[in-house]
Length: 295
Image (cartoon, rainbow, N blue to C red):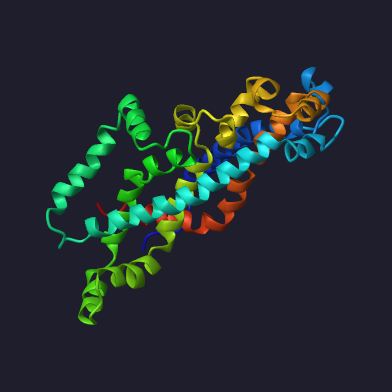
């Protein structure tokens, strides 16, 4: 009988791995704590470089101003729209493509799969892509950040692989009961796919929340910028010059300084994702592992 005792070497190896992972975790947390400390500090200590991991001259004035600046509120509204509507459309389209591709009875299934995978190997070039978006009259609309990115092929393949792992007997039994393909998808596949759909939905939401380069390409109107583009303008010092509309907002930004405001905006911009993750975390590992087992 094989002994279940852990050898000294294995125990030491586990302690080393745990120590290294703990060290990397602390290194990853330090920048986040530094930004939080800056967001809760007065402007003078920040500009003098005195703030590290703890706030100096504690104040929440920067957070108050974040929710009073009209340009930031508009950007948050745009980002929320992109993240919610975009994620819903992307999940819907991914499921609609993944389900038929996972069924062996689909005619020309292999050829269609190769055609879909081709888009991973050869993504669209930006100039023809821009011309296509312009021809669809999506320039300067939030839909330019949603419709052209309605599906990510890699995420769709993960969903497809998960669907393929569902026993064929379930589908055959439902077919014998007189169900059609839509009923099979809705009543059999989707209830069994909550883990992978929640995981892919989180990936889509993070991508949509952090959308940046497409907004630079397709959005010229500052009133339609997502939060990441607005934050970029703040970090490069364009808050007063090009992103704050009224003189009252300019005065407010100058009075509290921009460094604390930049830090507070950075923290606020990631809070929704931090709130959403704990509710999806229990599905995260299962969704990725199951979806990547079978190709």
